[in-house]
Image 1 (cartoon, rainbow, N blue to C red):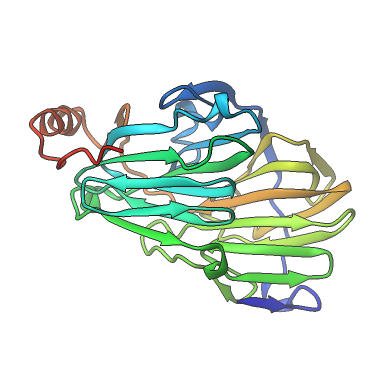
Image 2: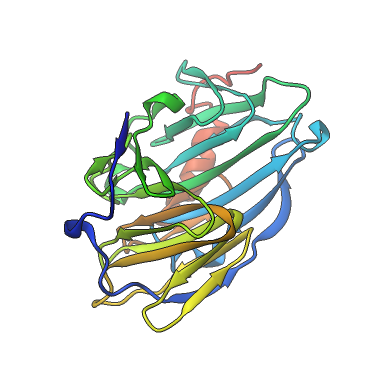
Length: 302
């Protein structure tokens, strides 16, 4: 579904935009079976960007950089949101779910009390590009039932303004409800495509933590006093402030594509050991013990 707006609706106008607190370059690394990626949101930023735990960006035309994929591995205590820009990846998990993630689609998986899953390429050549976001669960939900949802590209609502196309993966933008709504963390996840010189603004609750990651071109973020430039492959952490009501952006001469992600912080302790995220060390020890005892179910295999 696509909604066309002629201009920013006054109801959703941003009057006092957030400043840029800092720019983050991310760290080149690999994960799974040698998949090359950039870890943009790293563990030291988890408290600052609560409820978000991690953001990985991956993209390559060389199959050697991604062909190994992510074989069987466990998770407990959070959600993974995988957004595919290009390529095909097959998901299988120990709860019996499977799905094919393709261009423009999203896989939203709730690990809850525990899952083993695999994410493996279904291509041997061509470009594979996308993002994986880790979203924390509140302590009360960490041992809830696992869940899985495939969201095809056509199921993601879009809104269009002059020079702008916005894919609303989660939350809402200018009255357009996203494909996913979550009560506790209230995540906002937008994929914003801007033509050269085009602008867009998005209201964000003052208490939410928020960031912008630019993956094509460059953006200028209006901070109220100046224009802060965010180049390609940089994340801008947006400053919090009780009087700040959102973000304003304008694309550079080549246009831009960026993710805008925001959410209500849980303000709970974070205990992480690899693929397990709980609130105490004792819960982490229990997660490891349960995984070793086979309580996450049978590995899905290939």
